[in-house]
Structure formats: structure tokens, C-alpha cells
Amino acid sequence: MKILLLSHVPKIGSKGAVVEVSDGYAKNALFPKKLAIPATPEIVKNWELKKQKEQSQKEERKEIIKKIIPELQNHIFEFKVRAGKNNEVFTSIHQNEVGNAIEKFLSEKYKLVGPEDIHVDIKPIKDLGEHTIQVRIGREDYIQNTRVTLKILADK
Image 1: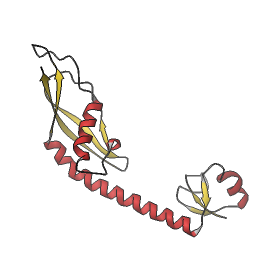
Image 2: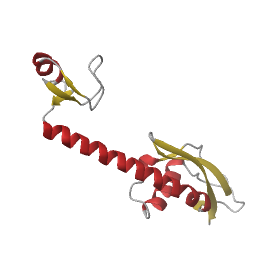
Image 3: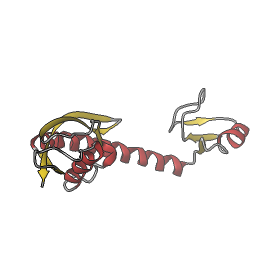
Image 4: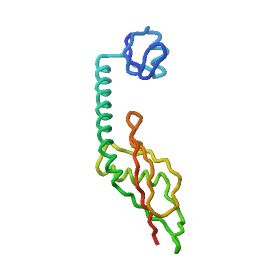
């Protein structure tokens, strides 16, 4: 029986492969565990179309990320925090706030960029002024590192 593998099966094949296996193995082992489906011509054609669409989206995302990097480097993200008379800060800026600000900035222009494409790993910032931080943009197939400038202002 010809089957389409939905995930990697040791000694059989990798995800997306069309292979020939015995009817019993397919019906008793692979189908119940949702590791494979029968490889009808229509299913194989739809699988190929899906792979092509995913590949084109990856390429489009890669091009968008290349455009994004200079924009992020030139933009200053401003945050206002509560501060006292002597500029002592009562709160801090966390990585999720920075990630949300970057996502909001990018989502206005680019549809394929979402929260899963923005990776910020910083300690909370408790000082006023400008700070440059490292940010990773992209997913497992294409990731770019860049620097982003944050400006922390006192909100009195």
C-alpha cells in the first residue's frame, strides 16, 4: 500500500515521503497513530501544493526580515516609566514589553511578521536614558540578529 508519511518514521522514511508498506502495517500501526495517510493522487497533489506554499512564505518572510533590520536599527522605541523627584525609577521595562513594542511597530507594515518572529532576551531595565539591546528576528528557518535602541523616559 502506498502511504504519505505525516512525520518521520524510523526505517520507513521522513515526513512527506510517499512509500510502499504492507497493508497490515499501515492499517494497524501507522494510521491509528496518525503517522501516515493513504497516498491517493489527490492527497499527494495537495501535500505538494502545501509544501510549495510554505516554501514561498518562508522565502517571503526571509526577504521581509532583510528589509526590517535597517528599519529596526534606525528606530528608537520610547518607554515611559514612573520616576521620583531625583529620577529614581519605580518600575522597569521587561522583555515582553519590548517585544510587544517591536511587534506593534512591524505589524503595521508587514503581515508575515508575528510575535513568534521576535526574540528579546534581556534583564529588566531600571535606568533612564538610551539603551541598546540585542534582538533576534525570524524563525528556525531564518534568523537575523540586530540591535535595537530603547529610550526610557521619566513619566512624572
